[in-house]
Length: 405
Figure (cartoon, helix red, strand yellow):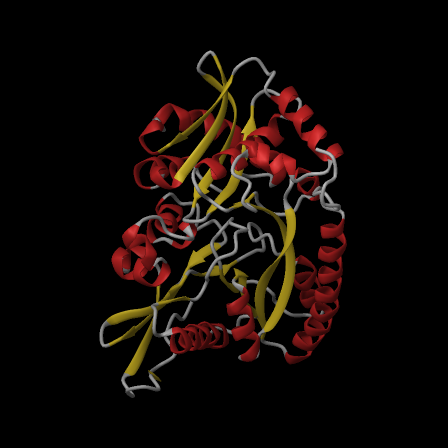
């Protein structure tokens, strides 16, 4: 693939040329420079979004979870001015649409039925991660210039290589609006998130629910916790190598049932132990010290991100306990205000996770196809907005102040 940059883009303040380059490996970009764009707040603590940190993306690459043979070929974008990195983006050439969670399979089929070649395409995304965050990673003070340079560069790579499309998935609402203003197509989706409304503890959260929902959750928690063992929370140095052996078994089982082939390699978990364990919360159900089920979470500055779950024994409601209720417990105890428990799942609604919008941006090389997709997205956005409104009205929270607890 031709990875040439866009050529110089002029900074509107001082006319200094801007250089854009695509890198085949993140190891070519200094971690401190990347993180100064992706998560500058991490210099004083946790990143808001652990998934765009250099160490997370590099672990995906060096473990072989992305790269040759995976359908995710890195083309990391870097924008420099005066030899200083001012913007970057995790860009991949995609040979399929797996591991994205914003589905375009129907677009691919339609494009190919019309005689086009949909793959490869370009994707600015965090692989296998349906969590909203900045995708156009711009150093503070360069927001407008950096975004424009990254988008121009990605589009230039797409057009120079005759690619069908560019997609920016799980971006922020601000990025979606800015991208739409620059001519990209905006798409809406939805997920279910738990938000702290000043509950204080799990009891305070339960008190905000309707009587029926509160009783159901208490019943589920009691059933789950009767599996015959204990539930533990592990992070940082509390996580030991044997915990990854157990979690790999869980992950393989879930991956085989959901995707056919797990996306992450075994080596990713070893690298996570070395470089990411301070960012990770493992919630394990174990009996006599042996894990039988577990949930893996990434810890952000304000948000706990639920990512993977698995088990080797089936127990009533244990999935809900480890993935939803224990996550809420931990978030409340550690001052986090949001839990994102992954993509999809209307069953989360009854457990206190409310629908929220997600955003993505899309560009199609073929003008006729682009018009057809634009019409589809306009109708889809209306449907998503209506669905969020309806689902929120059916949420589990008390509708009348003073309803009996």
